[in-house]
Amino acid sequence: MYPDIEPYDHGLLDVGDGNRVYWEVCGNPNGKPALVVHGGPGSGAGAGWRRYFDPAKYKIVLVDQRNCERSTPDAAEPDVDLSTNTTWHLIADFEQLRRELGIEKWLLLGASHGATLGLAYAEQHPQAISEIVLFSVTNTTRREVEWITRDMGRIFPEEWARFRDGVPEDERDGNLPLAYSRLLHDPDPAVRDKAARDWCDWEDTHVRTAPGWRPDSRYDDPVFRLRLARLVTHYWGHAAWLDEDVLVREAGKLSGIPGVLIHGRLDISSPPDVAWRMAQAWPDAELHLVEQEGHGPGGDGTRELILGALDRFALRA
Figure 1 (cartoon, one colour):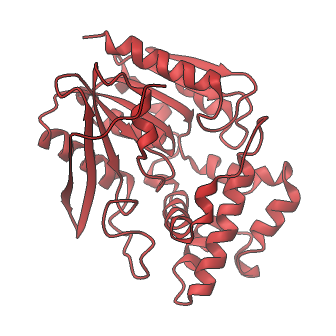
Figure 2: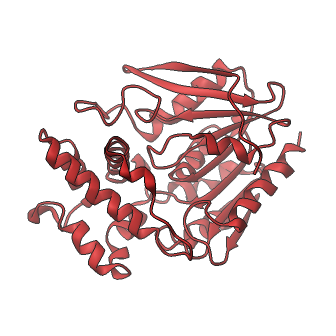
């Protein structure tokens, strides 16, 4: 990966509804514009994202999506209102920032839930997108949410039973993300903390399918745990406010936009058929299934493919 660099510009964008979204720009001010679409939702655009890009060739824009990390208010605050945090709000934020920065088109790099958001954004505003590189591809359909929060229990039955039993008995057969969301907004801090721990324990479990897996140390931070758990349950509980399978059905809107989809063969929590179906519906996308790798950028194969795609697109006008 490329050496770490520091931003040369940053700010807080007032996007309305009391929200201010943190953004930063690094690399070459005259380089090819690129937008990082982080996952989670709620993981934040950490410094590691900068290192995928050649800083001499790219103008790299990182954004902490609404209510996470350096954006305000923080989803971990006791009385935060998440009603104005939806897929459609985040897409509008990206477009507002693109205009503020005077960018005509930018490349999208996204992962996990950032793949869902990146695809939704690109299908709404294809004229603003030059290329797309996605790894750990998701569409956040209801089927996918059910798979992660229920069907993965067939692979990790003991851990899933603990996860299910973290919500009241009369809610265990319903929408588990929404049941957790209610607990995560309970007036009692102890209830909120237990729900965040239970949720993040399951997050750390269902991605544990590839050799060399290590627990995510970010979950040791109670603020990060609560922030992430609140945002993930908020989005998953509503299937990202997207019609079922709409991203595949409307993939024709991406015609003419080159794409690279990278997915670990052992990514069972986000099954490879999600990326495969998208590649079938999007003629300009190439799909790479990486053997012996799971969810995220942890393996050498995934990282090399990301870097290779970005280096190749850096040369494209």
